[in-house]
Length: 204
Image: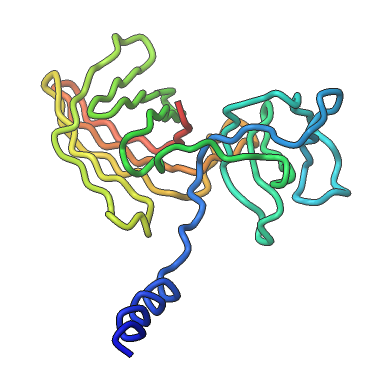
């Protein structure tokens, strides 16, 4: 009887624990495609949708940005648009989720064209006609559970300061039909001007 008392709480805990959801974006490799074949990229998550591109069978480090509602397809960017491939032919790369701040990111937007490269603890901001500006992350925060897949940064460097918020959301760059899995809002006060940007982020 004592043994059952000890085991039962463990069983109940395992049943109550939620399954770890797939986090986007992440890297995946082509798997299960014959050496003389290709993996089709389709316009919609359907085997009958038009083919808009192909991926060689030995391709690795594909950035996956989303999944279909039925979980059978994965979204990725191909050229100037997004497309869909069958999930059965992709194998996820082991990597930490992007919101853990251990994954390099590249963020960008338009009007004006700007970009931010992120390495853990450091940002580099590039603007047209200007030298890259190095910015340190003075403070950061992310939900420990990852339930919201959000990062907040307090930024400072070179006389500039501000903050940025990155969230898991479908994001369009405004220049193509590509879809990204991370949106960024970037606010920076410099000695010359106040900058407010909105854009998208990808794995770097």
